[in-house]
Amino acid sequence: MTIDLIIFVASALVAVFGATMMIAQRNTVASVLYMILSLVAQAVCYLQLGGLFLGAILVVVYAGAIMVLFLFVIMLLNLRGSGEQGVPAPAVGQFTKLVFGVLLTLELAFIVKAAPFSGSTTGIVGMSPESFGSVKAVAETMFTDYLYPFELTGVLLLVAVVGAVVIARKRRMIETGDTADAPGKDTGAEE
Image (cartoon, rainbow, N blue to C red; front, side):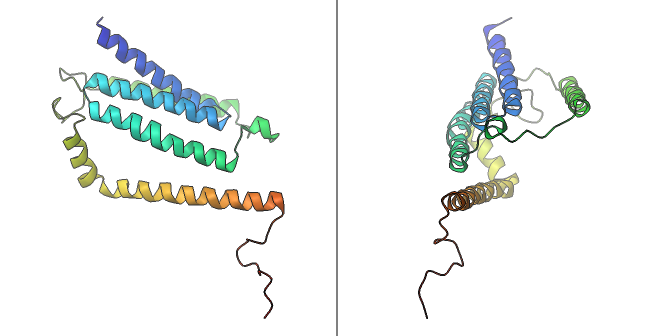
């Protein structure tokens, strides 16, 4: 067993652990931090596969910018875990959890079984190891085949931030009882 394989397997296990803990957390801030851990471990996997640009993008764009945006929205809305607010979490039956767990395990088994473990270093069909993760390959794919999803993602993030600001403003007005700045409210000027 080489050191590269050990690092790859360890980072893959950390990525799966971080993703699992992200879903299992009730505290939203802890969930975001586990997601950052998962993204950094995935970046290490990309570095091991030779995708230096993809690894850097995962750390800089996703773990850096997007997760900071998520933390900003969470703190702006003052979200806490459901146990901290006194509101009970929605009850999901043990049977439902068991069914989803078995289905996800079967899906993972089928993915691992069907994975093309060929002689290529990337293991991705149709992509040569030289072009995997390069700036040119990522840019060509992103701005040709996936241009509309890329643009829609930007619009979706913008709508999410605007929605978070509107919800936080309404909540603040309800808590303080200040309705002077409410839309459609008369400012007091007599006609």
